[in-house]
Image 1 (spheres, rainbow, N blue to C red):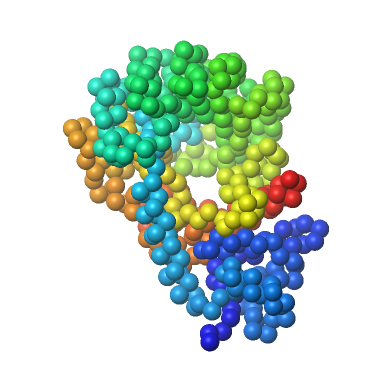
Image 2 (image 1 turned 90 degrees about the vertical axis):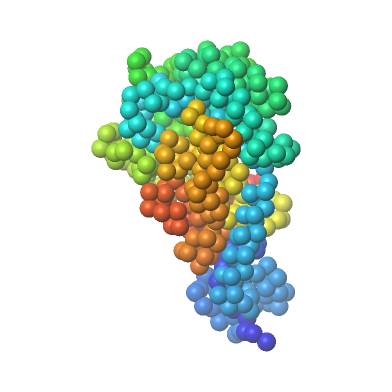
Length: 454
């Protein structure tokens, strides 16, 4: 019989609660256990002596059953984890398809940190191309070429840009929404919110039912970063349009891009939301996002604006301040704890590697929001009939089992290999680790504290 040992995929996280318990997470079974400090300390060691461990038989058997203790070698476990990654990814690709219509690349804002600044190199006028009715018709036809089984279509199409809901697009957006509605789709939009009032008649639960808007702090700070290229300050008009959307029954998600310099301003913004009663509205939600220097920008954004990036630990502490908002990963852990189920495994980081497709006004197809407008990341086109190219394979075949570094990483099926957009300037076979062990610890603790408060 092979010797019992700690699984290579056992992750032990100290919870810093009064009992000093640990959370155990297993990297390919998805098992989660809360264990006493003594057990957590043993399983925190690189190679604990399990054979001579004075552990109660009942607990040891449970640890074996859930994968934390095993007889498999590290190589056997890695091979098994990679088989799991390939199997889950195959299922993901055959599952639901999500579609974005990139209405145009133009924008009425000039946010200096926007990754789409790259497209300005294409020459004056390139970004002003707007989807025509013919292109919209071809795009809807293309959806069924991508996935003939309409039951596998996500019925919510996202309007994206540039800025999809700008006044310049008033001729085409109603056509998109009307035609989409006739085919059984409804819509959401990622918008700066400035011209939202021009689209008031399209706002509602059956048409544009959800919007995401970015506000980078209170009016003083936001207006320095996110301003209309002709009219300047944008904050007050966006606030008015948020109220308009809520009154129309639209779900509103507010994002704030945070660094060390605007953190206090974001706190003031949240207080304003409370004063305006936005926080009392179940249709309203808010989340902070850690601002990073995207490698797809032409310039280092620290050279074109005043930025002081937060570290991961400090951002997680900042995020903890907003008790109504947990990070996406802490939500997964909380769900597993509440329902006594394994943690959901993910061999991919996001939909770009699965069923996400972005159709632009030049009839090109992309699969990542941060790769649009970059010719080398076009995965296909719908000019005549649907055609894929070699980049389709790069994006849609990538998972943790195809990335050499991830093949040997105990965190791989928890982090999914990281955001491809952050490494695509280096190579598609690289991971984007982004301090994931620290992120996992912070999210595990956040989920546990919320679980204990239920």
